Length: 112
Image (cartoon, rainbow, N blue to C red; front, top):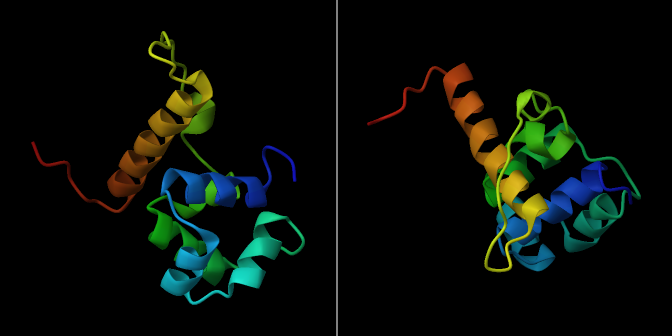
């Protein structure tokens, strides 16, 4: 599994949602062994599986597939303090920006 594989992105979504494979299986209807194969990149995920995983974990399909329209345009600088991990901070920022872009694409206005 490479850092940029779909399996790795599913594993990160699971970790971010603080969810086990078993819980994700219950929420999505995808069997735990199938989830394990998806995470290990032993088989490609189908679009309906990606949609179910994205919905259950609170991320977007673009984040799971690596087709993010935001990640390539974002530049950020920050100082990690208190044991914060820069890569985790960047992933969280990209997650929120990706959700914002998705809501804009759907015509859902921000509420002030």
